[in-house]
Amino acid sequence: MQQLKICGGRRLVGEIRVSGAKNAALPILAASLLTADDLVLHNVPDLADVRTMLKLLSGMGVRVERNGTDVTLNAGAVTSTVAPYELVKTMRASVLTLCPLVARFGTAEVSLPGGCAIGARPVDQHIRGLRQLGASVEIDHGYVKAQAARLTGAHLVTDMVTVTGTENLVMAAVLADGVTVIENAAREPEVVDLCNCLKAMGAKIEGEGTPVIRIEGVERLHGAEHTVIADRIEAGSFFVAAVVTQGDVLVTHCEPRHMEVVLDKLREAGAQLNVGADWVRVRMTGRPKPVSVRTVPHPGFPTDMQAQFMTLNCLAEGTARITETIFENRFMHVPELMRLGAQISIEGHTAIVQGVPALTGATIMATDLRASASLVIAALAAQGESTVDRIYHLDRGYEHMEDKLRSLGADIVRVNA
Ligand code: UD1
Image: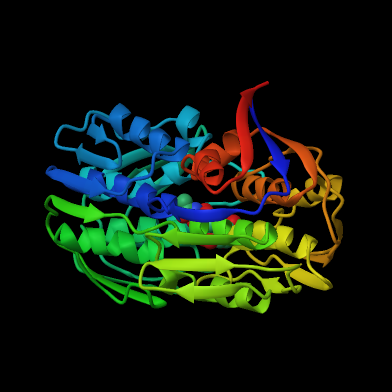
């Protein structure tokens, strides 16, 4: 098992480039199933989750060619419409193959993802929407088994805002017969990026980025070339790392307009920001001011930045309240941060963080993807050495994180335990 050894207390200074967005790349890779032609993608990050999706698609007979961040996929000779448990259990986003398979091939067997560390995370909305589009869906031996001659357009209203649910249903509707309207749709930039890619493939979609998406189904989609958007969560994680180490970091190739709330919260914390068209420079002197946040769907404060802002508040001059409304069990980083000397108490869905002047190094354990980032950031600011265990969580979603941090002056190495 690999670990990160971090000697904290160094200011991060320099320039780093953000990678392509994991959460945009995954649905777009799944969208390759919707056409027999080549889908040529750029800026696909080299991450464990991307490798899992490519393995899943290859197992279905999709031809995959990868050259760095360029990936070409061809689903002209699909041999299987099954997403097996072994792959789905390592990555819930595998469920994004469900609707493209049914839409193009009329059949799919996709393992139910089950719960995960941060919550139960059911996929009932994906299934209900697919049924409303005319598929017959049953759960059998832990698999979602869906059949449809051709899906038909329908009016869908999801019970809650769901990101992958919206993406799956859009991918069902693009090849359906007639018009589909999805109300209460997720507005995340990653949903918009998927829709832009689908439109380049010939799909007819309006309203992406708003709560109502209208899709007019077409007979078939064709090949396309698309560049994946920048990862706003990776960028945000580096911003917070710059703040807590009282550093000066220029983050390039990012999309500041996707991160307005996060940038506002950083300003509130006392960071000095310069914002360009595709870059942000973050400078910080002194301890941050406390910033309370409440996670909500986009354009509100993202749940995927909650743990990193918890770390920021651990070092703030004062008390902040962090309320998590999206996932029921997303405070697992709290006991780990407390091992570094943080003062945090939990009341229901709210963590009350009383800032301390300094954290001190310790051995800590990553529990999920974004929690791992918050722990690495905390260790960068802590006095002395920390060991972060179970970093396979980090590798799911951050491309070469320790190399990027080292280039900013961090003392961080990966070791085999
Ligand atoms: C996506 C992101 C994840 C992010 C999350 C919220 C990807 C690959 N992952 O996850 O990084 O943290 O959005 O921004 O894009 N729900 C149901 N039934 C459903 C679907 C969702 O009850 O059928 C619930 C979930 O349990 C959760 C809430 O709705 O409480 C939002 O989940 P959702 O937006 O679907 O998260 P994901 O798409 O899984």
